[in-house]
Each structure stands twice: as C-alpha cells, then as structure tokens.
Image (cartoon, rainbow, N blue to C red; front, side, top):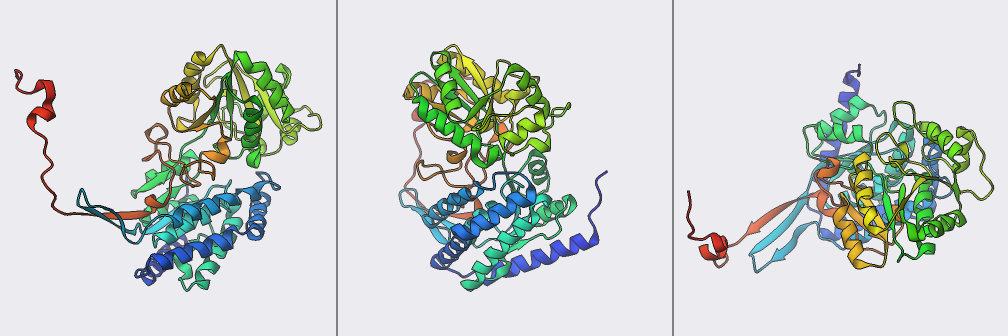
Amino acid sequence: MAREITQEEIDAIDEMMLRARKAMDEIADWDQAQVDRLAQAIGWHCGNEKTFLRIAQMGVDESGIGDRAGRGGKRFKILGILRDALRGKSVGVIEEDPEKGLTKIGKPAGVIASLIPTTNPELTPPVTGIYAAKCKDAVIFSPHPRAKETTNEMVNVMRHACKLVGAPEDLFQCVRKPSIPATGYLMASADLTLATGGKPMVKAAYSSGKPAFGVGAGNSTMVIDETADIAEAAANSRMSKMSDFGSGCSADGNLIIVDAVYDKMRDALIAEGGYLCSPEEKELLAKALWNDDGSRKIETVAVDAKTIAHFAGFELPDGAKFLMVEQEGIGKEHPFSREKLCVTMALYRAKDFEATLPMVRAIYEVGGKGHSCGIYSFDEERILRHAANAPVSRVMVRQPQSKANAGSFTNGMPMTSSLGCGVWGGNITNENISLKHYMNVTWVARPIPEDRPSDEELFGEFYNTEVL
C-alpha cells in the first residue's frame, strides 16, 4: 500500500509554492528584453561545455545509466532551445492579425511542476527553465530519486544565473527529498505540470486535477527502401542507437528493411559496429532484457553492449558497439518488437515497400503509438505514404531519430526535451513541447466586416433539398 504524505512534506511544498509565487510577482512587470536576458543567462551558465559536461557526467554516475563519455553531447539541445525561445515573443502583444481583427497577448502560465526523468537530470531543468523564464513562470522541479543530486546541482546553477541578472532565485526550486506522495501534492498545488518520464508518472500528472503536458512511450521504427543511401542509413542508425546507450525513447529500436537491400544494410550496420546475435545468443539476450512478466530488467537499461552481453552470458568481439537480432514476429508475445531502452535493435525483412506498411502499424500496436518513426528513402510518394500510414506524431526523413525528432539544427522541428504523443499516446498534444505551451494567451477581437457565406455556399448541393 502506498504511504500517505507526511505533514513535513506538505509544509515543504507549501513553502516552495509561496516562494515561487512571490518570485513571479517580482518579475511581473519585466519586459521582453529583460526575460530574454534571463533566458540567455540560464542558457550560458547551464549550457556552456564545462558546466554541462560536469553535471551530465554526475548524472550518469549517480543514476548508473547512460553513456558517461557521450552524455555531454546533449548540450546542443540547450543551444537550440535558446535559439527558438529568443525568436519568439512571450510578453505583451505576441501576434497580430489585422485582417481578422485579432491581437494575442502572452501571459505566464503560473507555477509549473516539472517532473524530471532519471535519464535527463541535467538537460530537462534548463530546457524547462529557458522557456519558463521567457514566459515569467516559476518552476518547482521534482527529481527522480536516482538522480536527485544531479537535478539539484543543475537547478542551483539556474538559480545562480537568476541572481546575476537581478531575478529572484526562487523562480527555480528543487524538491530535496522526492517521493511519490510529495510529487502528487506538488502537481495538485501547481498551475501546470510538465511530466517527462515513464507511463506511471504521466498517468499521475493527468490525475492531479491540474492541466498537464505528458509524453508517451517510444518504440522508434525506421523503414529502409531500395532508394536509400545505405551507408548514411547505417551510420545514422548507429548514431541514434548509441546516443546515451539507447536510454532515450527516440533511439532506433526496429529497422524494417526491404528485401532488395536487406543484406547490404545488415552488412553496413555490422561495419558500423553492430553485432548480429546468433539464434542462441538472441534467446539469452531476451532473458537479459526482460523479466518473465514482460518488465525490463534495470541491469541492462542504457548500459554498453559488452555489459549487456556479459549479463546475458556471452561475449562480444572487440569493436562491437550495439546488438542486433533478426526478427520476424510482431506482437506482445515477441519482446524484440517492444521498446528496448538499450543498445539493441531488431532487424525485420520486408518483401518490398508495400509490405512495410502493415508491419509498421503492427509494431506500434505493441508499443510506441503516437511517438515517432522514420524512413530512409528518396521517393517522396513513399515518404508521404509512410507518414500517412504510421500512427505517430513525427516522422524523420533520412535523419538519426534520437538526434532529430526533438528538434535539431538541420530540421524545422521545435527544440524540446518533451515529445507530446497525441491521443494515440494518451497525451493532450502531439507537438514538441515548446515556448507556446508555457504561456496563457489572451485573444483580443475587434469588429470586422461581416464574414458570413450565403446559405447556398454553406450547404452546397443539399441546399433547399427535401428535409424530414
């Protein structure tokens, strides 16, 4: 039975809320230039290479998951979010449409409860902080217990940035002793919750009684057809799969390769460091990744390939970076068609492009609906058919999924660390959570010339026909 929240926890959250609202009051009259300067200060102090690498590696050490050497590469996201934030308006008049007589005025959303996943304790706080600062929101961060010190360290850097530009430090606070009851009370007390994490966290956010932006589970699936640049597809797949040892929900999990280039693609993946497991090793790998009830074994989440193989009971040759299994079955009874959360991917062979379409739909029935997928093809008709077919919110074309779908400097997706998965994934939005989601907007409507079509235009062929 879940324990009840203690009076000490209630008092602590109540005190943080009071301080957060006081901090918001202190910057209520700040103009666009002032909040932009605050966002820049947060971006620099959190996103400079020295500080971010130190705290990112602290996060890997504390949580025990992820790639210590590569985690620092995530700092590009802070730079991209700052770019997007600075290009948007968030104070006063943010948009005007004279033809429709409309003016939109941006206002703070309020105090935000930000739930931090164990996989991004160094990244999610400044991402949230930059957008929140732009909108004059305050944020109380609730860290994952396995990464609470890392989250607190990054929030302390954000508080330092506030102090340097004359903003109240209490715009950003962090729960020191996180617990499920305390997080629940925080969400119920805040004005808005940003829930970046697992399904239980998102469900709790939606049950808090307050508005919430949640995310969904991933199971990223890529289609490779015969028009693809195979070397590019293999390199990008390796890059996406290896990012932070596959901890992210966007890491390539399944590759559906048409028969005409299957062998070539498989060999290219091997050249990139992929290790193709034998049928016997595949069985051992399945036991190493999943418990009998289908849940993931924490020991093999987001760790390097050799650690996974050793845990499974076989050894890898030098140069092996990620694991591959050849797979036919799709369904909940076939674990390799699920999200893997590690450096393992499943290779599927399809007769031709037409055959990939039902396979994609079937995989997303297993998991990952609403999240994202991709395609390596230069056939625009196929790209659009794949996008129309897949029940996902975003489709990356010829890009490394985990480096692209949350925004990159080489595509137009809004930069974020939170991916809405729409109704498919149980979320209220299928957009990348970005600046506009951090503000309230007041619409001002002025009179315009009447815009009323005739009845004949509205009803078309049905106008004046017989009715009941």
